[in-house]
Image (cartoon, rainbow, N blue to C red; front, top):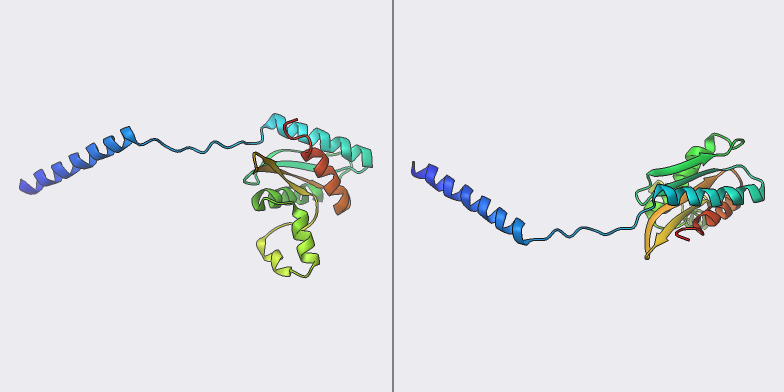
Amino acid sequence: MEALTRTGVLLLGVLLGGLWLGGTAHAQLADKKAVSLAEAKKLIAAAEAKSGEIKVDMCIVVVDANGDSIASVRMDDCQVGSVDVALAKARTAARFRRPSKVFEDGVAGGRNAILALGVMPIEGGVNLVAGGKTIGAIGCSGGTAAQDGQVCLAGAAVLSK
């Protein structure tokens, strides 16, 4: 009986302590900006316009900060393989918080260890920044790496405008 009483007192103490902590401690939740679907559509529309201007059909993908797709388009005559490439470029830019061209330049400069990071080291992925933080990325594929980069930059330029 004495052991049961000690256990009961211990449990009561744990419960009361938990209630006390829960009543006075305040959760610190992150207040993070994120790319909305509406914003992703604006970015894609601007990128599509640039793609039309340079006359290259593209696949355009917008991802969140984790690299998960929010929205994408594949223009009519864009090769199907560009779907995966655009997503990989966007994921690279989002997850590493820098344009995929940084990795292309590193590999071109002989830093082949970059390939072990699991990145897409080709221009055409641009991280989206708001309030000094990467909140997502846009990735484009279908033209040359430089064309893909131009289209991404055109899309990223309309962020929150």
